[in-house]
Image (cartoon, rainbow, N blue to C red; front, top):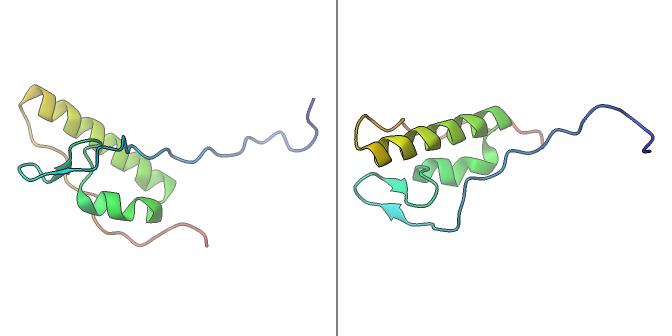
Length: 85
């Protein structure tokens, strides 16, 4: 049995990248992960909460594109980093 703190170490948010890094000119979304260019560029600067929001938007975009109806979620865009240095 391990000794020490019983508090769980927070798990980092996993990147949605699936190594299919190609932007679709029609949707302006990555064909692999459904992030916008800004979301791809700024992923490491986003806080955990912002990264989770990007994941939520990617899922919504995936559903919209698969179903052919609705508007894909807008980009999170450029944000001020909230990560501790």
